[in-house]
View: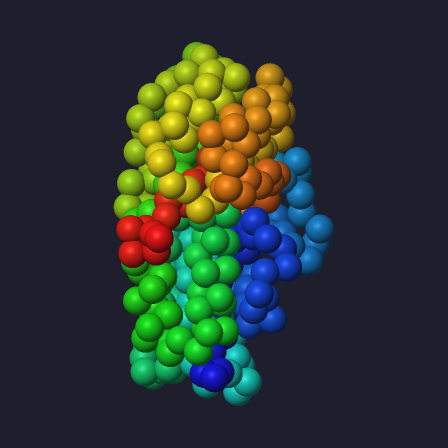
Length: 287
């Protein structure tokens, strides 16, 4: 069996925390800079440490390791594993994908390391990682595993309702004026990840209406492999049971998971957010 490790990052959240092949997964640790301080997961940072709305003059942002730092991490892993498959959060949400590509070039390991832009994040990224470990355990080669994951990527759909719009300004999605006015008006925009890039698709009045929109979104699909709800801080008005009951009645065979937004996702979309990620069964996997 190929000796392959699956590498991902701190934004990944796993619907099944004890999935098959978990021992093959390694995490590239990310950090968060807030008010001049840099904190990592080992510092015990929590999503609730981040403000729902960024005050004037303050910012919180995700800090990604440099290509040199990543190359050192990869070189260490290649002493234990023959090949590495890196699956990063969307290249439109952080620089990790690009930095990973540069890191591979630095150590001239293009033949033993492949890098995939997941075009998703959180449980979407976690589901891809779980899928990768599943097929490597079946004996798939690095090339076949990479090809399989790339086939799955277009079938993962993500929605985020994000009223803390200055966080989106931090990653270049919104102009500062847009973000400021949107927060003043207490807008709750819903974004989808279109090939990994956040695109605004509608605005709702509150999280309860966002939940209604999420349910309508789920109704558009016939065959889903997984549905996950991501809940941030201060998301009052959300009754998880409504979506859960809807899924049980309409997709009784589809696993449904609920998660708290982790701080690294919170630093990108804001801690006061609500997310939905659905994984559609690819036609090639039907039957």
